[in-house]
Length: 527
Image 1 (cartoon, one colour):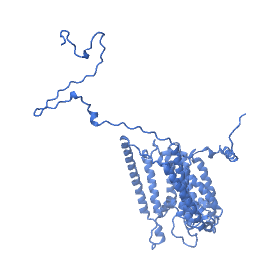
Image 2 (tube, one colour; image 1 turned 120 degrees about the horizontal axis):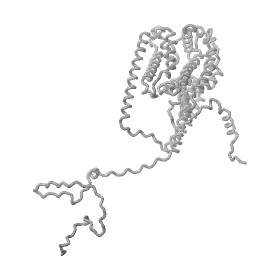
Image 3 (cartoon, helix red, strand yellow; image 1 turned 90 degrees about the horizontal axis):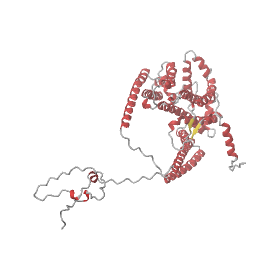
Image 4 (spheres, helix red, strand yellow; image 1 turned 135 degrees about the horizontal axis):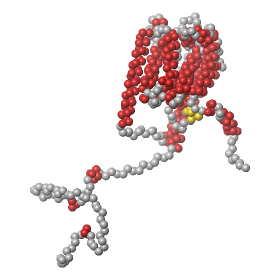
Protein backbone atom coordinates (compact mmCIF):
# COMPACT_ATOMS: atom_id res chain seq x y z
CA UNK A 1 0.00 0.00 0.00
CA UNK A 2 1.60 3.25 -1.17
CA UNK A 3 1.51 6.38 0.94
CA UNK A 4 1.60 9.85 -0.66
CA UNK A 5 3.97 12.22 1.10
CA UNK A 6 2.77 15.31 -0.83
CA UNK A 7 0.26 17.63 0.80
CA UNK A 8 -2.07 20.01 -1.03
CA UNK A 9 -4.11 22.63 0.71
CA UNK A 10 -7.76 23.23 -0.07
CA UNK A 11 -7.06 26.17 -2.40
CA UNK A 12 -4.71 24.10 -4.57
CA UNK A 13 -7.22 21.25 -4.71
CA UNK A 14 -9.95 23.73 -5.72
CA UNK A 15 -7.89 25.09 -8.62
CA UNK A 16 -7.01 21.57 -9.76
CA UNK A 17 -10.69 20.63 -9.69
CA UNK A 18 -11.61 23.75 -11.67
CA UNK A 19 -8.87 23.15 -14.25
CA UNK A 20 -10.00 19.55 -14.71
CA UNK A 21 -13.57 20.76 -15.22
CA UNK A 22 -12.75 23.23 -18.00
CA UNK A 23 -9.87 21.31 -19.59
CA UNK A 24 -11.98 20.12 -22.52
CA UNK A 25 -13.56 23.46 -23.34
CA UNK A 26 -12.70 25.46 -26.45
CA UNK A 27 -10.88 28.10 -24.44
CA UNK A 28 -8.60 25.60 -22.68
CA UNK A 29 -7.99 23.86 -26.00
CA UNK A 30 -5.85 26.87 -26.91
CA UNK A 31 -2.23 26.79 -25.87
CA UNK A 32 -1.08 29.94 -24.10
CA UNK A 33 2.61 30.79 -24.14
CA UNK A 34 4.11 33.05 -21.49
CA UNK A 35 7.47 34.02 -23.01
CA UNK A 36 10.45 34.07 -20.70
CA UNK A 37 12.12 36.87 -22.64
CA UNK A 38 11.09 39.81 -24.77
CA UNK A 39 9.38 38.96 -28.05
CA UNK A 40 8.17 41.41 -30.66
CA UNK A 41 4.50 42.37 -30.05
CA UNK A 42 3.87 42.40 -33.81
CA UNK A 43 3.33 38.65 -33.72
CA UNK A 44 0.56 38.77 -31.10
CA UNK A 45 -1.27 42.02 -31.88
CA UNK A 46 -4.47 39.97 -32.17
CA UNK A 47 -4.08 38.81 -28.56
CA UNK A 48 -3.54 42.41 -27.43
CA UNK A 49 -6.72 43.38 -29.29
CA UNK A 50 -8.60 40.69 -27.37
CA UNK A 51 -7.19 41.98 -24.06
CA UNK A 52 -8.46 45.47 -24.88
CA UNK A 53 -11.84 43.94 -25.76
CA UNK A 54 -11.98 42.43 -22.25
CA UNK A 55 -11.19 45.85 -20.75
CA UNK A 56 -14.02 47.33 -22.83
CA UNK A 57 -16.40 44.66 -21.58
CA UNK A 58 -15.57 45.33 -17.92
CA UNK A 59 -15.75 49.12 -18.14
CA UNK A 60 -18.82 49.00 -20.37
CA UNK A 61 -20.65 46.79 -17.89
CA UNK A 62 -19.90 49.31 -15.14
CA UNK A 63 -21.17 52.20 -17.28
CA UNK A 64 -24.41 50.31 -17.95
CA UNK A 65 -25.31 50.67 -14.26
CA UNK A 66 -25.92 54.42 -14.66
CA UNK A 67 -26.56 54.99 -18.38
CA UNK A 68 -30.22 55.57 -19.38
CA UNK A 69 -31.07 54.70 -23.02
CA UNK A 70 -33.85 57.30 -23.26
CA UNK A 71 -33.84 60.20 -25.70
CA UNK A 72 -34.12 63.06 -23.21
CA UNK A 73 -31.93 61.37 -20.56
CA UNK A 74 -29.06 59.86 -22.54
CA UNK A 75 -26.76 62.90 -22.54
CA UNK A 76 -27.73 63.84 -18.96
CA UNK A 77 -26.96 60.34 -17.67
CA UNK A 78 -23.50 60.45 -19.28
CA UNK A 79 -22.94 63.86 -17.69
CA UNK A 80 -23.93 62.35 -14.35
CA UNK A 81 -21.42 59.53 -14.84
CA UNK A 82 -18.71 61.99 -15.78
CA UNK A 83 -19.22 64.51 -12.97
CA UNK A 84 -21.11 62.88 -10.07
CA UNK A 85 -20.64 59.09 -9.93
CA UNK A 86 -17.50 58.09 -7.96
CA UNK A 87 -14.79 57.02 -10.39
CA UNK A 88 -17.25 57.46 -13.26
CA UNK A 89 -14.87 59.87 -14.98
CA UNK A 90 -12.08 57.27 -14.86
CA UNK A 91 -14.25 54.43 -16.14
CA UNK A 92 -15.60 56.48 -19.03
CA UNK A 93 -12.15 57.73 -20.05
CA UNK A 94 -10.70 54.21 -20.00
CA UNK A 95 -13.67 52.90 -21.98
CA UNK A 96 -13.42 55.62 -24.61
CA UNK A 97 -9.66 55.32 -25.17
CA UNK A 98 -9.84 51.53 -25.08
CA UNK A 99 -12.37 51.62 -27.94
CA UNK A 100 -9.98 53.73 -30.01
CA UNK A 101 -7.10 51.47 -28.99
CA UNK A 102 -8.98 48.36 -30.08
CA UNK A 103 -9.65 49.83 -33.53
CA UNK A 104 -6.00 50.87 -33.87
CA UNK A 105 -4.66 47.47 -32.75
CA UNK A 106 -7.05 45.66 -35.09
CA UNK A 107 -5.85 47.74 -38.06
CA UNK A 108 -2.19 47.21 -37.14
CA UNK A 109 -2.81 43.49 -36.74
CA UNK A 110 -4.50 43.28 -40.15
CA UNK A 111 -1.75 45.12 -42.01
CA UNK A 112 1.01 43.16 -40.26
CA UNK A 113 -0.62 39.91 -41.32
CA UNK A 114 -1.03 41.35 -44.82
CA UNK A 115 2.59 42.40 -45.33
CA UNK A 116 4.04 39.28 -43.66
CA UNK A 117 1.89 36.95 -45.79
CA UNK A 118 0.55 34.97 -42.83
CA UNK A 119 -2.68 34.23 -44.70
CA UNK A 120 -0.73 32.00 -47.12
CA UNK A 121 -0.18 29.13 -44.67
CA UNK A 122 -3.72 27.74 -44.90
CA UNK A 123 -5.09 30.66 -42.90
CA UNK A 124 -7.67 31.90 -45.39
CA UNK A 125 -10.54 31.37 -42.94
CA UNK A 126 -8.66 33.24 -40.23
CA UNK A 127 -8.06 36.14 -42.62
CA UNK A 128 -11.71 36.36 -43.74
CA UNK A 129 -13.02 36.21 -40.17
CA UNK A 130 -10.43 38.82 -39.19
CA UNK A 131 -11.67 41.27 -41.83
CA UNK A 132 -15.25 40.78 -40.62
CA UNK A 133 -14.06 41.29 -37.05
CA UNK A 134 -12.42 44.58 -38.07
CA UNK A 135 -15.65 45.84 -39.63
CA UNK A 136 -17.68 44.84 -36.56
CA UNK A 137 -15.10 46.52 -34.30
CA UNK A 138 -15.60 49.83 -36.14
CA UNK A 139 -19.39 49.43 -35.93
CA UNK A 140 -19.11 48.70 -32.18
CA UNK A 141 -17.09 51.86 -31.61
CA UNK A 142 -19.46 53.84 -33.86
CA UNK A 143 -22.58 52.81 -31.95
CA UNK A 144 -20.82 53.51 -28.65
CA UNK A 145 -20.24 57.21 -29.16
CA UNK A 146 -23.62 57.63 -30.90
CA UNK A 147 -25.69 56.68 -27.84
CA UNK A 148 -24.36 59.76 -25.99
CA UNK A 149 -26.62 61.73 -28.35
CA UNK A 150 -24.47 64.84 -28.55
CA UNK A 151 -24.07 67.13 -31.57
CA UNK A 152 -21.26 64.94 -32.84
CA UNK A 153 -23.42 61.84 -32.45
CA UNK A 154 -26.29 63.55 -34.28
CA UNK A 155 -24.00 64.18 -37.28
CA UNK A 156 -22.90 60.54 -37.37
CA UNK A 157 -26.51 59.32 -37.02
CA UNK A 158 -27.74 61.53 -39.85
CA UNK A 159 -24.94 60.40 -42.18
CA UNK A 160 -25.45 56.71 -41.36
CA UNK A 161 -29.21 56.94 -41.89
CA UNK A 162 -28.83 58.70 -45.25
CA UNK A 163 -26.23 56.17 -46.43
CA UNK A 164 -28.44 53.26 -45.44
CA UNK A 165 -31.40 54.84 -47.22
CA UNK A 166 -29.32 55.24 -50.41
CA UNK A 167 -28.85 51.48 -50.85
CA UNK A 168 -30.96 50.31 -53.82
CA UNK A 169 -34.06 48.17 -53.26
CA UNK A 170 -33.47 47.27 -49.57
CA UNK A 171 -32.28 50.65 -48.31
CA UNK A 172 -35.49 52.07 -46.77
CA UNK A 173 -36.32 48.76 -45.09
CA UNK A 174 -32.81 48.50 -43.62
CA UNK A 175 -33.01 52.06 -42.35
CA UNK A 176 -36.28 51.33 -40.54
CA UNK A 177 -34.83 48.13 -39.05
CA UNK A 178 -31.62 49.75 -37.79
CA UNK A 179 -32.77 53.27 -36.90
CA UNK A 180 -36.48 52.88 -36.24
CA UNK A 181 -39.13 55.48 -36.90
CA UNK A 182 -37.28 58.31 -35.13
CA UNK A 183 -34.75 59.30 -32.51
CA UNK A 184 -36.72 57.63 -29.73
CA UNK A 185 -36.37 54.24 -31.42
CA UNK A 186 -32.79 54.90 -32.45
CA UNK A 187 -31.40 55.29 -28.91
CA UNK A 188 -32.74 51.98 -27.69
CA UNK A 189 -31.81 50.07 -30.85
CA UNK A 190 -28.25 51.36 -30.99
CA UNK A 191 -27.90 50.61 -27.28
CA UNK A 192 -29.00 47.02 -27.99
CA UNK A 193 -26.51 46.74 -30.84
CA UNK A 194 -23.69 48.15 -28.73
CA UNK A 195 -24.07 46.10 -25.55
CA UNK A 196 -25.63 42.86 -26.81
CA UNK A 197 -25.74 41.98 -30.51
CA UNK A 198 -22.36 43.20 -31.72
CA UNK A 199 -20.38 41.84 -28.70
CA UNK A 200 -21.97 38.40 -29.15
CA UNK A 201 -21.05 38.45 -32.86
CA UNK A 202 -17.50 39.53 -31.99
CA UNK A 203 -17.06 36.74 -29.43
CA UNK A 204 -18.43 34.14 -31.84
CA UNK A 205 -16.03 35.18 -34.59
CA UNK A 206 -13.10 35.33 -32.16
CA UNK A 207 -13.61 31.65 -31.34
CA UNK A 208 -13.15 30.85 -35.04
CA UNK A 209 -10.50 33.47 -35.69
CA UNK A 210 -8.04 32.75 -32.88
CA UNK A 211 -5.34 30.20 -33.68
CA UNK A 212 -4.61 27.42 -31.26
CA UNK A 213 -1.28 28.80 -30.03
CA UNK A 214 -1.51 32.21 -28.37
CA UNK A 215 1.15 34.43 -26.80
CA UNK A 216 0.28 36.19 -23.55
CA UNK A 217 3.16 38.49 -22.64
CA UNK A 218 2.41 40.03 -19.23
CA UNK A 219 4.70 43.10 -19.54
CA UNK A 220 3.32 43.97 -22.98
CA UNK A 221 -0.28 43.60 -21.77
CA UNK A 222 0.50 45.89 -18.83
CA UNK A 223 2.23 48.37 -21.15
CA UNK A 224 -0.74 48.54 -23.54
CA UNK A 225 -3.20 48.93 -20.67
CA UNK A 226 -1.05 51.61 -19.07
CA UNK A 227 -0.74 53.46 -22.38
CA UNK A 228 -4.54 53.64 -22.69
CA UNK A 229 -4.96 54.90 -19.13
CA UNK A 230 -2.11 57.36 -19.63
CA UNK A 231 -3.85 58.66 -22.76
CA UNK A 232 -7.01 59.11 -20.72
CA UNK A 233 -5.07 61.29 -18.31
CA UNK A 234 -3.42 63.39 -21.01
CA UNK A 235 -6.55 63.70 -23.18
CA UNK A 236 -9.65 63.59 -20.96
CA UNK A 237 -12.84 62.95 -22.90
CA UNK A 238 -15.30 65.78 -23.19
CA UNK A 239 -19.05 65.48 -23.41
CA UNK A 240 -19.68 67.97 -26.17
CA UNK A 241 -22.94 69.82 -26.49
CA UNK A 242 -26.26 67.99 -26.21
CA UNK A 243 -28.24 67.66 -29.41
CA UNK A 244 -31.14 70.10 -29.64
CA UNK A 245 -33.35 69.83 -32.76
CA UNK A 246 -34.30 73.52 -32.74
CA UNK A 247 -30.63 74.69 -32.59
CA UNK A 248 -28.52 74.39 -35.77
CA UNK A 249 -25.51 72.13 -35.15
CA UNK A 250 -21.98 73.50 -35.22
CA UNK A 251 -19.01 72.27 -37.22
CA UNK A 252 -17.78 68.87 -36.07
CA UNK A 253 -16.21 65.75 -37.53
CA UNK A 254 -16.68 62.06 -36.67
CA UNK A 255 -14.08 59.82 -35.03
CA UNK A 256 -10.73 59.32 -36.77
CA UNK A 257 -11.60 55.85 -38.11
CA UNK A 258 -14.58 57.34 -40.02
CA UNK A 259 -13.04 60.63 -41.10
CA UNK A 260 -11.73 59.21 -44.39
CA UNK A 261 -15.25 58.18 -45.35
CA UNK A 262 -16.50 61.60 -44.25
CA UNK A 263 -14.09 63.26 -46.70
CA UNK A 264 -15.68 61.41 -49.62
CA UNK A 265 -19.16 62.42 -48.46
CA UNK A 266 -18.12 66.09 -48.25
CA UNK A 267 -17.57 66.14 -52.02
CA UNK A 268 -21.40 66.09 -52.34
CA UNK A 269 -21.19 63.31 -54.91
CA UNK A 270 -23.62 60.39 -55.01
CA UNK A 271 -24.01 59.04 -51.45
CA UNK A 272 -24.30 55.40 -52.44
CA UNK A 273 -21.12 55.50 -54.56
CA UNK A 274 -18.99 57.44 -52.08
CA UNK A 275 -20.36 56.07 -48.81
CA UNK A 276 -21.39 52.48 -49.60
CA UNK A 277 -19.94 51.20 -52.89
CA UNK A 278 -16.32 52.33 -52.46
CA UNK A 279 -15.95 51.16 -48.84
CA UNK A 280 -17.62 47.90 -49.84
CA UNK A 281 -15.19 47.54 -52.76
CA UNK A 282 -12.25 48.11 -50.39
CA UNK A 283 -13.50 45.48 -47.92
CA UNK A 284 -14.22 43.02 -50.74
CA UNK A 285 -10.68 43.45 -52.12
CA UNK A 286 -9.25 42.68 -48.68
CA UNK A 287 -11.38 39.54 -48.43
CA UNK A 288 -10.11 38.27 -51.80
CA UNK A 289 -6.39 38.87 -51.15
CA UNK A 290 -5.56 35.30 -49.95
CA UNK A 291 -7.18 33.83 -53.06
CA UNK A 292 -5.44 36.05 -55.62
CA UNK A 293 -1.97 36.13 -54.06
CA UNK A 294 -0.08 33.42 -55.98
CA UNK A 295 3.42 34.24 -54.79
CA UNK A 296 5.25 31.26 -53.32
CA UNK A 297 7.23 33.21 -50.74
CA UNK A 298 6.06 35.12 -47.67
CA UNK A 299 8.38 38.11 -47.43
CA UNK A 300 7.03 41.49 -48.54
CA UNK A 301 10.09 41.92 -50.76
CA UNK A 302 9.24 38.71 -52.61
CA UNK A 303 5.65 39.87 -53.25
CA UNK A 304 6.17 43.30 -54.84
CA UNK A 305 2.71 43.75 -56.40
CA UNK A 306 0.80 42.75 -53.25
CA UNK A 307 3.06 44.93 -51.10
CA UNK A 308 2.67 47.91 -53.44
CA UNK A 309 -1.12 47.54 -53.32
CA UNK A 310 -1.04 47.54 -49.50
CA UNK A 311 1.16 50.66 -49.35
CA UNK A 312 -1.13 52.40 -51.84
CA UNK A 313 -4.19 51.62 -49.72
CA UNK A 314 -2.43 53.02 -46.64
CA UNK A 315 -1.57 56.20 -48.54
CA UNK A 316 -5.21 56.58 -49.59
CA UNK A 317 -6.42 56.13 -46.00
CA UNK A 318 -3.94 58.65 -44.59
CA UNK A 319 -4.68 61.33 -47.20
CA UNK A 320 -8.47 60.99 -46.97
CA UNK A 321 -8.35 60.96 -43.15
CA UNK A 322 -6.39 64.20 -43.11
CA UNK A 323 -8.74 65.72 -45.66
CA UNK A 324 -11.76 64.73 -43.59
CA UNK A 325 -10.38 66.62 -40.58
CA UNK A 326 -9.58 69.75 -42.57
CA UNK A 327 -12.16 72.56 -42.42
CA UNK A 328 -11.72 75.94 -44.07
CA UNK A 329 -10.70 78.33 -41.24
CA UNK A 330 -12.34 81.35 -42.91
CA UNK A 331 -15.34 82.04 -40.67
CA UNK A 332 -16.64 84.71 -43.04
CA UNK A 333 -17.71 82.00 -45.49
CA UNK A 334 -21.03 80.20 -45.12
CA UNK A 335 -21.06 76.94 -43.20
CA UNK A 336 -21.83 74.78 -46.24
CA UNK A 337 -19.03 76.37 -48.26
CA UNK A 338 -16.52 75.67 -45.49
CA UNK A 339 -17.52 72.01 -45.34
CA UNK A 340 -17.82 71.12 -49.03
CA UNK A 341 -14.65 69.81 -50.73
CA UNK A 342 -14.17 70.54 -54.43
CA UNK A 343 -14.89 67.15 -56.04
CA UNK A 344 -12.78 67.77 -59.18
CA UNK A 345 -9.67 68.63 -57.21
CA UNK A 346 -10.28 65.89 -54.62
CA UNK A 347 -10.80 63.01 -57.05
CA UNK A 348 -8.02 64.22 -59.36
CA UNK A 349 -5.56 64.05 -56.46
CA UNK A 350 -6.82 60.62 -55.39
CA UNK A 351 -6.61 59.24 -58.94
CA UNK A 352 -3.07 60.54 -59.41
CA UNK A 353 -2.05 59.22 -56.00
CA UNK A 354 -2.75 55.61 -56.99
CA UNK A 355 -0.19 55.19 -59.84
CA UNK A 356 2.36 57.42 -58.10
CA UNK A 357 2.32 55.52 -54.80
CA UNK A 358 2.11 52.12 -56.50
CA UNK A 359 4.96 52.87 -58.93
CA UNK A 360 7.23 54.41 -56.31
CA UNK A 361 6.63 51.54 -53.87
CA UNK A 362 7.21 48.90 -56.55
CA UNK A 363 10.48 50.56 -57.58
CA UNK A 364 11.71 50.79 -53.98
CA UNK A 365 10.91 47.10 -53.38
CA UNK A 366 12.92 46.13 -56.45
CA UNK A 367 15.85 48.27 -55.28
CA UNK A 368 15.67 46.69 -51.82
CA UNK A 369 15.66 43.22 -53.36
CA UNK A 370 18.67 44.09 -55.52
CA UNK A 371 20.56 45.49 -52.52
CA UNK A 372 19.78 42.34 -50.54
CA UNK A 373 21.17 40.16 -53.34
CA UNK A 374 24.37 42.23 -53.42
CA UNK A 375 24.72 41.99 -49.65
CA UNK A 376 24.45 38.20 -49.79
CA UNK A 377 27.21 38.04 -52.40
CA UNK A 378 29.62 39.96 -50.16
CA UNK A 379 31.31 38.37 -47.12
CA UNK A 380 29.30 38.72 -43.96
CA UNK A 381 30.53 40.93 -41.18
CA UNK A 382 30.34 40.11 -37.53
CA UNK A 383 26.90 40.91 -36.15
CA UNK A 384 26.24 43.40 -33.41
CA UNK A 385 26.36 42.05 -29.90
CA UNK A 386 23.36 42.45 -27.63
CA UNK A 387 23.51 44.84 -24.70
CA UNK A 388 24.59 43.08 -21.53
CA UNK A 389 23.56 44.47 -18.13
CA UNK A 390 25.41 43.33 -15.06
CA UNK A 391 23.62 41.99 -12.00
CA UNK A 392 24.59 45.05 -9.96
CA UNK A 393 22.97 47.43 -12.46
CA UNK A 394 19.91 45.21 -12.66
CA UNK A 395 19.43 45.42 -8.90
CA UNK A 396 19.98 49.19 -8.97
CA UNK A 397 17.42 49.71 -11.75
CA UNK A 398 14.94 47.46 -9.99
CA UNK A 399 15.27 49.39 -6.70
CA UNK A 400 14.86 52.72 -8.54
CA UNK A 401 11.72 51.46 -10.25
CA UNK A 402 10.30 50.22 -6.95
CA UNK A 403 10.91 53.62 -5.36
CA UNK A 404 9.33 55.37 -8.33
CA UNK A 405 6.37 53.00 -8.10
CA UNK A 406 5.85 53.85 -4.42
CA UNK A 407 6.01 57.56 -5.21
CA UNK A 408 3.45 57.17 -7.99
CA UNK A 409 1.10 55.24 -5.72
CA UNK A 410 1.25 58.02 -3.12
CA UNK A 411 0.75 60.67 -5.84
CA UNK A 412 -2.26 58.82 -7.23
CA UNK A 413 -3.81 58.57 -3.77
CA UNK A 414 -3.49 62.29 -3.09
CA UNK A 415 -4.62 63.16 -6.63
CA UNK A 416 -7.84 61.23 -6.06
CA UNK A 417 -8.38 62.99 -2.74
CA UNK A 418 -7.89 66.36 -4.39
CA UNK A 419 -10.28 65.58 -7.23
CA UNK A 420 -7.68 65.90 -10.01
CA UNK A 421 -9.30 63.18 -12.08
CA UNK A 422 -7.24 63.41 -15.24
CA UNK A 423 -3.98 63.64 -13.27
CA UNK A 424 -4.80 60.49 -11.33
CA UNK A 425 -5.41 58.63 -14.60
CA UNK A 426 -2.08 59.89 -15.88
CA UNK A 427 -0.29 58.65 -12.75
CA UNK A 428 -2.03 55.25 -12.85
CA UNK A 429 -0.98 54.84 -16.49
CA UNK A 430 2.62 55.64 -15.58
CA UNK A 431 2.41 53.12 -12.74
CA UNK A 432 1.36 50.36 -15.11
CA UNK A 433 4.14 51.23 -17.55
CA UNK A 434 6.67 51.16 -14.70
CA UNK A 435 5.30 47.80 -13.58
CA UNK A 436 5.75 46.50 -17.12
CA UNK A 437 9.36 47.70 -17.07
CA UNK A 438 9.99 46.10 -13.67
CA UNK A 439 8.53 42.79 -14.83
CA UNK A 440 10.69 42.83 -17.93
CA UNK A 441 13.83 43.63 -15.91
CA UNK A 442 13.03 40.77 -13.53
CA UNK A 443 12.52 38.42 -16.47
CA UNK A 444 15.76 39.55 -18.08
CA UNK A 445 17.73 39.12 -14.86
CA UNK A 446 16.29 35.65 -14.31
CA UNK A 447 17.25 34.64 -17.84
CA UNK A 448 20.77 35.99 -17.37
CA UNK A 449 21.14 34.08 -14.09
CA UNK A 450 20.16 30.79 -15.73
CA UNK A 451 22.44 31.33 -18.71
CA UNK A 452 25.69 29.27 -18.56
CA UNK A 453 28.89 31.25 -18.08
CA UNK A 454 30.71 32.11 -21.30
CA UNK A 455 33.48 29.77 -22.34
CA UNK A 456 37.00 31.19 -21.89
CA UNK A 457 38.57 31.99 -25.23
CA UNK A 458 42.09 30.52 -25.67
CA UNK A 459 44.87 33.07 -26.21
CA UNK A 460 45.69 33.63 -29.84
CA UNK A 461 49.16 32.36 -30.87
CA UNK A 462 51.71 35.11 -31.39
CA UNK A 463 52.47 35.61 -35.04
CA UNK A 464 56.12 35.52 -36.15
CA UNK A 465 57.58 38.63 -37.80
CA UNK A 466 56.87 38.94 -41.48
CA UNK A 467 60.56 38.83 -42.52
CA UNK A 468 61.23 35.65 -40.59
CA UNK A 469 58.17 33.99 -42.09
CA UNK A 470 59.10 34.85 -45.66
CA UNK A 471 62.88 33.92 -45.71
CA UNK A 472 64.43 31.07 -43.68
CA UNK A 473 67.62 31.67 -41.71
CA UNK A 474 70.78 31.29 -43.77
CA UNK A 475 73.77 29.41 -42.28
CA UNK A 476 76.97 31.29 -41.66
CA UNK A 477 78.99 29.40 -44.24
CA UNK A 478 76.42 30.17 -46.94
CA UNK A 479 76.36 33.92 -46.37
CA UNK A 480 78.15 35.90 -49.14
CA UNK A 481 81.46 37.46 -48.11
CA UNK A 482 81.90 41.16 -48.34
CA UNK A 483 84.28 42.20 -51.16
CA UNK A 484 87.39 44.20 -50.28
CA UNK A 485 87.23 47.90 -50.84
CA UNK A 486 88.03 48.94 -54.37
CA UNK A 487 87.07 45.61 -55.90
CA UNK A 488 83.92 44.71 -57.60
CA UNK A 489 81.56 42.59 -55.74
CA UNK A 490 81.81 39.03 -56.84
CA UNK A 491 78.73 37.58 -58.38
CA UNK A 492 77.25 35.06 -56.02
CA UNK A 493 77.56 31.48 -57.09
CA UNK A 494 74.22 29.92 -57.80
CA UNK A 495 73.60 26.94 -55.63
CA UNK A 496 72.19 23.83 -57.15
CA UNK A 497 68.66 22.96 -56.44
CA UNK A 498 68.28 21.03 -53.24
CA UNK A 499 66.95 17.58 -53.92
CA UNK A 500 64.53 16.00 -51.52
CA UNK A 501 66.11 13.62 -49.08
CA UNK A 502 66.10 10.02 -50.19
CA UNK A 503 65.75 6.98 -48.09
CA UNK A 504 69.06 5.32 -47.25
CA UNK A 505 69.44 1.68 -46.50
CA UNK A 506 71.85 0.46 -43.90
CA UNK A 507 75.02 -1.09 -45.47
CA UNK A 508 75.80 -4.75 -45.02
CA UNK A 509 77.69 -5.83 -42.01
CA UNK A 510 81.47 -5.41 -42.28
CA UNK A 511 81.34 -2.53 -44.74
CA UNK A 512 81.75 1.18 -44.18
CA UNK A 513 79.30 3.80 -45.28
CA UNK A 514 80.52 6.32 -47.83
CA UNK A 515 78.66 9.01 -46.01
CA UNK A 516 80.74 8.48 -42.88
CA UNK A 517 83.65 10.45 -44.34
CA UNK A 518 86.37 10.26 -47.02
CA UNK A 519 87.77 6.72 -47.52
CA UNK A 520 91.47 6.19 -46.73
CA UNK A 521 93.93 4.82 -49.36
CA UNK A 522 95.49 1.65 -47.99
CA UNK A 523 98.76 2.26 -49.94
CA UNK A 524 99.44 5.55 -48.18
CA UNK A 525 101.08 5.15 -44.81
CA UNK A 526 100.09 7.37 -41.99
CA UNK A 527 102.78 9.72 -40.73
